[in-house]
Image (cartoon, rainbow over all chains, first blue to last red; front, side, top):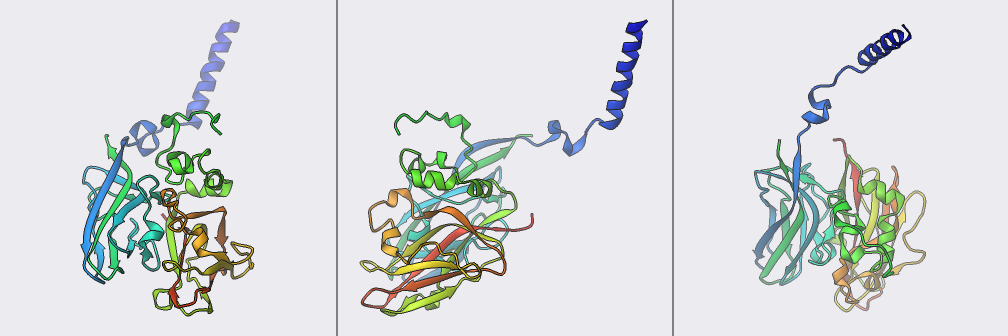
Length: 153
Length: 175
């Protein structure tokens, strides 16, 4: 008799609990969240500027299969130049172009860009604006390093 | 320092660009100053914050970067509201130097107790380019509206030169 009472109390509690916390569905359910695989990614950009040349908004195309988290910038060049680039919001990262030696890090220590902007798959990426300040031909290499995020489900 | 415990790379958040564990130049036994700066509680919160994006401000504007010898010039940086600054760079002309400081327009707080030498902070001058160009502040500075940074540059060089101070940080934006 006592056992029967305990069982009915338990059922009652379970009913109450289920009415207070209805089963979740849709995007709120962790099982329905998209899953991703993350891999290291490097976008390698090269450009040769002529003397005092200014080029705006050069696209760095992001692969169509994965988003890109930009975490660092490094590179090299044969002369000085200034640069700016766009964030995923469309705004430029800097109010004026930045001197390359103030922003471009080294392969050992890429300049950290954080919190990392996320460029969507297939987008124009960090569209670069470049201006030569060396007064001669300037071969530029800029390496955008970060993480590729591939959606698996 | 060599007795610091090994950190399993599988436990490092590689999506956090300013995580000092992800760059060898910021390792605790390599650069304790930057390691501590990036682990400072406010910095930790900004590193992982949602709704902020990186922002760089260069001062002075390109038209006013050529400063005559012995001249002191102030530049009021036209920031977006709620700008957090966590690093700075300064670039004098080759073989030259200038002094600079950054002041909060409302509180009067300065980055340095007295104007700092740009050459001293510039890694190209003392062979530490391998550690990157940025000089990290020990604590990020917030410019609450209506405050803004004022960059003061004193050209101590004997001739005119291009002087640039670049501020690195982040601003808030709606998602």
